[in-house]
Amino acid sequence: MTPEEMQAAIEALQGLSSTNMEIFYYWCTGIMILIHAGFLMYEMGASRVKHSLASGTKNILAFAFMIPTFYMFGWLIYLSMWQGFTYDPVWGEFGLPMSAIMGPNMADQATGVFWGAFTLFACTTASILSGAVIERIRMASFVVLAVILGSVVWNLAASWGWHPAGWLVTEWGYHDAVASGVVHTISGFFALGVLINLGPRIGKFNADGSANIIRGHSLPMTITGLMLIVVGFFGFIGACVLYNYGTNGGWVNIYGGPTTLSAYAFNTLMAIAGGIIGCYACTRDPFWMMSGALCGVISAAAGLDLWYPPLAFAIAFAGGYLGPWAAKQLEKMGIDDAVGAVSVHGICGVWGLLAVGIFLGGYPGFSSWDGFEVPAINMMGQVVGAVVMIATGFIPGYVLSWIFNKLGILRAGDGVQRDGMDHELEGIAYPEEIRSH
Amino acid sequence: MINSSPITSWEGAEAIFTFADSPMGMAVCFWVMTAMLIVPLVVSYNAEENAEIEHQ
View (spheres, rainbow over the protein chains, first blue to last red):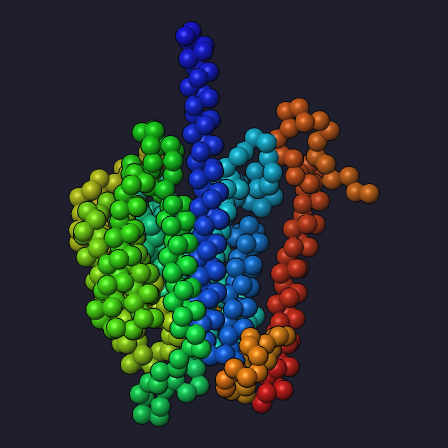
């Protein structure tokens, strides 16, 4: 083989690797849509019949509004804000909606595929908020809040802590491989900020402050939906790794650090199992048992590229125990989180970040960008990251919902809640003989 | 008919989407999309207000 032929063969192989990565990401995005099918079933099942269609519609609208708004400004924020609140015009240009690569372009195979995956991450954040606020939030206000969360807030945090040059990564050694912080903590605490202003469902709390259980109309639908979310998580987790992006010729994590797809397979499955069993040990409640899969994955997510699988199981088990316990504490504080989103995503997300600090200290940092000395993984970096994620999620959620509440557009009136949120929509969920009030 | 093609040949073509060579065309599409996001929200707010009155 001549040197020219060798060079041509190398270039052909590099092109094939690039194509493989784009195909991989493309289908991860498709699988991630199952998360939303799951959230749809989960939230409708967790609602009473008279609210079930409204809960589903809210979920679908969040998904639909997220896609164009992430195109308009979400991708731009992720690419350009990695220094903090300073805009990087060089990288920002790649995310501008009128850029030559933000549409069909024969010279660029990848941008749309990566944009698609990140858009689906954004949709996930909106769905996390969606479950917490069912049966009393007004539809249009929810959509606006979801857009702010999914197309502004989480991607700002992702630019800081889920980017090869993000300041949390390069200055503090923050490690969050599969987004315990930048997706789940952010969304959970955004939801908490909204819940404080939104208030509980009618009938949730008694005059003495004790809580009533408000059961959804279909626990089987809810549990099946949760299992679909777990399936979709494989797409989500797959989209957190890159193939042949770095110089090592193999898989790399979101920072460009070496990893293997095998690591994600081992630890994702272990975390699902640990979370389910941890929740079952804590509650014996089928709803929480299946939510435990999410508690487990979210708890192990930040270090999913590095855990010894039995340790991933143990961390997930602890997360599975922590989720329902935290939900109970929130309820005692008068917070009505209809599906436990704050505890499952927010609290377990924080636990996941701290678990990395506890168990993964000393792993060398890595950035695929030149010119950065990334500190090793350390507890202080994880604590700083957790505080940043909590604040970045909670503050905008609280402030915006406070404003909406003052304007009288946040919460449906008592009459609408009593008669059912579905009255605002055309169509009924079930035939009259099986409707309940 | 609107001529939205940015290319006259596939030879060496890069950005091939409609109006890729026309900032004005892209801007019009962008703002139409923006309006299509805002108007349904306004309609939804109005429908919710009506529902509030009907279900007091």
